[in-house]
Amino acid sequence: MKPTKTLLALRVKPIIPERPNYKLQEITSISHVDLPNNGFGIKNYYIPKTKFNHLPIYKKVQNTKVTTEIKRIQGDIHQLKQDILNEFPSLKITMNQSAGIINVKGDLTKELTKFFTKEIR
Image (cartoon, rainbow, N blue to C red; front, side, top):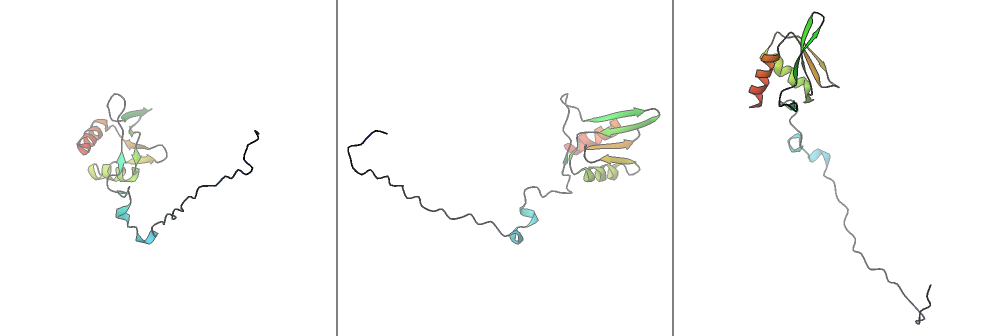
């Protein structure tokens, strides 16, 4: 440290004004309408298209069993199942929630593609 010519060197800290703490809103004052993603049950699902701009609806054949597989489902998969059953009431549908896949018994690729293109527009 260099010696200084002054006898006393003081450092004064600047005074920082205190900011008031942020008050959170009471949970009872928030309505479900005010929430950002409040569309649960109102077609709150999304099926992104493939890189070739097709819907991910595929015919799956295992031995003699033929099913139609809808992949890449994001959001409310139960509502999507209900919408498919409302349009085609006699179908047998199984779901894999964690993978976002719906399997429909039979070959319905054309019908489901037509249904989804109609619903998107």
